Amino acid sequence: FRATVPSAVDWIQNIDARLTTMCVDDEPGRCCQVRQGFFDAYEKPSYNQRLEEGVAECMEECGEDCKLVITGTSQGSAISAIAGIALARFNPFLITFGQPPTILDDCGDILPDDRYLRFQNSIFTSEFGFQYDLVCYLRGHVLDRNGQFILMGDDTKNLKLYEPHLVPSVSQINLGSLTSTEAHRLPLYIERIEKLTLENLEEVPLDGFDAGFGCGQDNECNTGSCLENQCYDLMRGQEFDSDFLSLALRSAELSQAVDSANRPDGAQVFSDGLEVAMVVRENDVCYAVFGAAEIGLGDGATRSNLVDRCTVGGECCPVREGLLEPYEAASFVVQWEEALRSCKTDCSTCEAVLTGHSWAASFASIAALSVAELDPTVITFGRPPTFIGECDAGAVNTDKTYRFINSVFENGNFDVDPVPNLRGSNSDDNGISILLGPDDSNVNVYPPGENSVTTVPELNKAPHELDGYISRLTTLRDTAAAGTPIGLSGFPYLGGCNKDHECEFGLVCRASTCSLPFGTTLLPTPAPTSEPEGTGSAAPRSYDFFGLLAIMVGALLSSTVLG
Image (tube, rainbow, N blue to C red; front, side, top):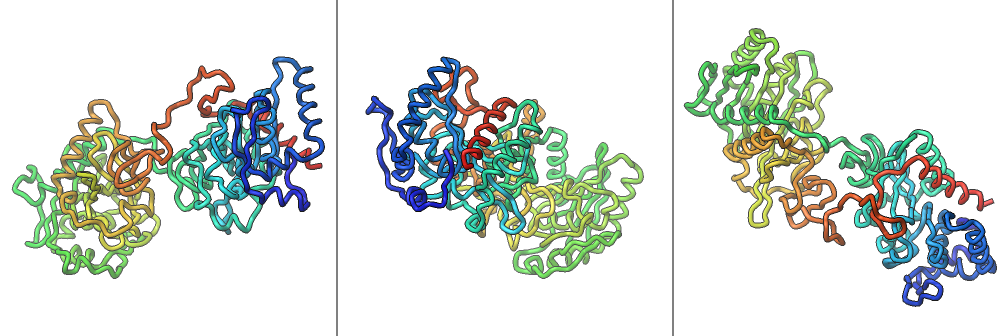
């Protein structure tokens, strides 16, 4: 069925959003609510009866092995859906491109999802960002959940098959889409499908786009994260092993020991009465540990004006003056630097680790700039915002800078450590921020620019206590040591949260709890492989090469009928 042509009749049909009931012939109990305009576009033309007679004749001549494929683009795709109801006795396949909302209730018993493919295109431009095919969102898209929704984009090796409850709503549409019809052009659909068939000899995954490609929401990325309209590698699918967690746990333990009488044997301790630091070698690690600084919320630590702090090589970071000043004022800065370099000289294969808790965590991060030539690993706990803005390339090794943030989830309240969220934490994107929670086998890694809260947190001091960090890391280390690697993709169902990013992929954060999206009662499960055709089985997770060829033929036929 062809798309809209420049005629008053077609446009009246397009905007007529009234509902009418359409039933399968001779089966008055099998009916769906459809849009009046598209119903008229199928029923009123003079060829309607001849079309159905022609299909019946073709199917009879072809035999039992033949399949009926109904296809179209734009208005033609909506008419295809109407035709699918009219011709339901043939159990047709529907393949549509840029289909507007058509059927406004559940029609799955007539048009099974596994035989109804709805392709939706998208484009990503520097001017408008990510844009969907706007026609798919006209008038009540949120109500039309029939069929399988498949998003196409610039990624020529992947598609996104939406779970029905995760199809974008009209409220998520980029306003730039209102000024462009590029994503709706049928030649672009054909071009995308041709590339998919040429570049994928076996199958095309349906789990979303690779990192770097355009997106409108997290579930459109196989990385699980859409940041600033591009798929971002959020370390989803990656894991922390027991070795890394042992290193993090020992860093937390030393951050506690530096301020006590339980410092390890052989530690070199530096203090001027206000600040304290120590350097100690344990096994193949040279630790530089900073003690809890004598800084209060009411004095210099709250000053947020910025001062550049640079490496020997001249790469700089904008540092909060209220944190830089007491660090530089410590009388032992030169001594601890010499001690760490000496440790590395004595053990060239040793890893240099800088660590600290609270304000001392900021000192560890600032100190890393002074010894950047050692390529140190920085592991901090409850660190306040320190580098506000972007550091020069090479100043901070963001892949080796870990910022742990603890949380408490009790009585339905999810409280995070408030110190990392004080004064502009959203602008301190340097390093990998890791949220700890009650879950003993999962943590959450934030993408750059994201943070655990968007408002000033409740000043619950409990999540900031170093004992809590040590307890959580001990549990995680033991879990990993027992053979269960720690996932980085957020907390599971019923875990605590402040944002969707803090929940496992597919869950949403609602009322401080990782929850199922509205409209679902069970977590998504893999599609059964033995379901017979036409019974409404769950969607596949990939398309094979020949399936893509069939889809391309549908697109080409939709294009040909326009002539």
